[in-house]
Image 1 (tube, rainbow, N blue to C red):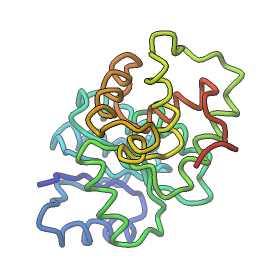
Image 2 (cartoon, rainbow, N blue to C red):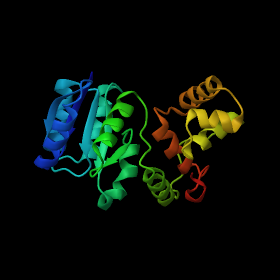
Image 3 (cartoon, rainbow, N blue to C red):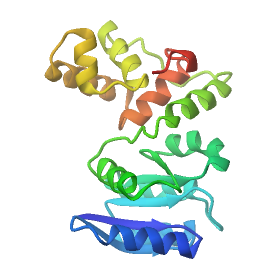
Image 4 (cartoon, helix red, strand yellow):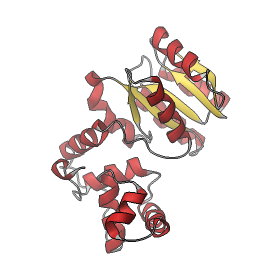
Length: 220
């Protein structure tokens, strides 16, 4: 059962998401919040597996709420952000705050369910495809700030895998590209994540762009 908290200051939107999620046998909405501050308090009380947060909310915005919730949970809770085309500039901030991905508010029901299950399973949601372009653009805008990490500790193959992750390739596609097994790809990814202190693929994408290993023109 995926225990979920839904936070959106628009009551109609929030209720719609809650009702849709509650139709599923494997998803239970344990709480709903009308702003970020309430989301933080309810997350501490209910300890959900996943929080679905609108980015723009009163009192505490979704990004700050995600940061607080994820820090307090010690990684036990995952965050999926809701945004609109008009709020694209916040997507990069949401991912760097620890969110595992984002959905557009006009997503379809199947897209919503897929996103919740993917993120709850511990993976990053890098779709719809616009995500990579957004991350690339806002990482590029911040490239004047020297990154806190470098890749000196990575092997050449690990660095290569990092680039392929940032280009949006799945494990199977990386294995095919490098002519190695899926198991070997997973080993490289685990070592890469450990060395660079990455939690998931979303953080790997951000790091690759910040380090200049991948640029918007080379993204898949």
